[in-house]
Length: 140
Image (cartoon, rainbow, N blue to C red):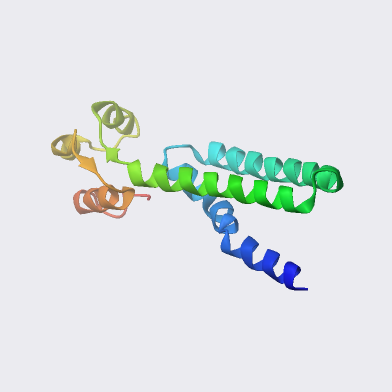
């Protein structure tokens, strides 16, 4: 009973459900289209199912302890890479991005002072853009 309880706590505390829940948002924030974010989320789910089947197949051969420790190692690696990705992320409005926006028939003349300016988060960039454009134009 104690082992099962410990497994439940560690699984919940690992935070992997939160990562999977916010995966589409994270993929969208790094610049993927809605269709691509959906596909990446499907791939994440398929990988989870695949490795669950691998674990079920080899649990008796490799042992529960070894699989648990290996799983925790991979969770640690995943969380570390997620942390590093968010820590090192920056947002910059480039001339190429402005040209792409211009194709959407949006007045981009107000964006010229922002070219080359770097933002620490997408929220900072969106806040600056919201100060320039009305809410009718902004769809973020």
